Image (cartoon, rainbow, N blue to C red):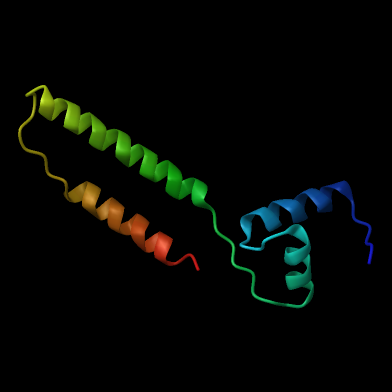
Length: 92
């Protein structure tokens, strides 16, 4: 089966397929055509948040090793990690 689409639609379909958990573009298009549930997720935001959190924690460790700080309240970091873990759990 062959179909014709505009370049704009082609680009949009490829982007949507990339965000889905489908194994291939063909699989994505078939699932869409047959009204199957398609799960999409964007890990870029989660990755960015984890990266920022890791950088902050690394900085705190460096300050501890330098003796500039002795006690750190990690509540903020614990809450952030719990939120990220919950976001990851919601990805099927």
